[in-house]
Image (cartoon, rainbow, N blue to C red; front, side, top):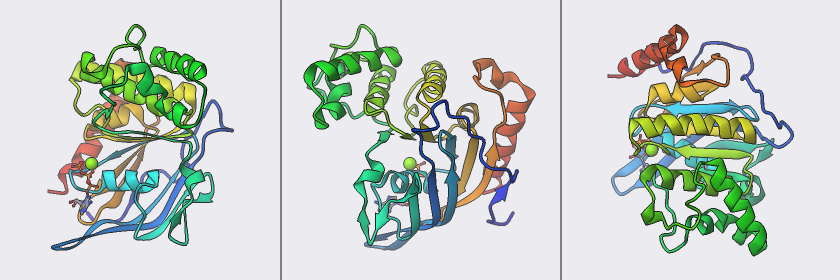
Length: 281
Ligand SMILES: Nc1ncnc2c1ncn2[C@@H]1O[C@H](COP(=O)(O)OP(=O)(O)OP(=O)(O)O)[C@@H](O)[C@H]1O
Ligand SMILES: [Mg+2]
């Protein structure tokens, strides 16, 4: 296999946002990321070109160390690309080496660790982004309680993070990311530490949140089946340096029930992606 990108279909990305006015598309063009280290440079990403439609759900998969987190951080504005451009909603993220903060103002981020403040209750953690924006105490509490309901945490609003299970803490982290009505949700293995059953349930809930919010989602995972279940397209990265090896559209109808995993169409996609990953050995 060559390192060239395989695009299995040439039509534009499948996009069906319920609120197309709010969601924004993302575009990375010619992106390289080189980390300088004491032992020399690490070329983490090379020649990444990717257009993500407004409201689209894209899963990013690939071997450990292939650059998934790096790409997500570049998309989130936390990391400047060494070369290339990043745009959100048609607006350049970096101008003359400086980040345009307005581009990222409506981004929600969720990482593998929930990173909740242990001394705040669930509702206060969820409401924190609203507090930082100057929303009044009453309004932010009302919104945070609503968000707790969205992610299935009703009854735990006044609990502390230590009183929650791992899955519940991740739900709170998602609710916090949703607090500012993000137009883009970037998620780095948010369910990686959860048991399989909780993870399946979180996937169903995330699908619902995506449908209702209309946000553009980029979701990093090590699980091929999770990637296929959730995504409109699965982007497979190949390591050293990280490049896009393939982009696989997932044309399974939505909403998807857990049973979709037993269908032939789902199985074929998973097998094809696994085979590609295995070919890298
Ligand atoms: N801050 C950093 N400084 C130097 N090198 C880094 C840094 N962050 C990542 N790298 C290197 O860049 C490459 C890509 O790392 P990245 O974390 O993006 O991979 P990943 O696909 O997210 O891996 P995993 O699946 O294990 O999370 C790796 O070779 C890693 O060692
Ligand atoms: Mg990572």
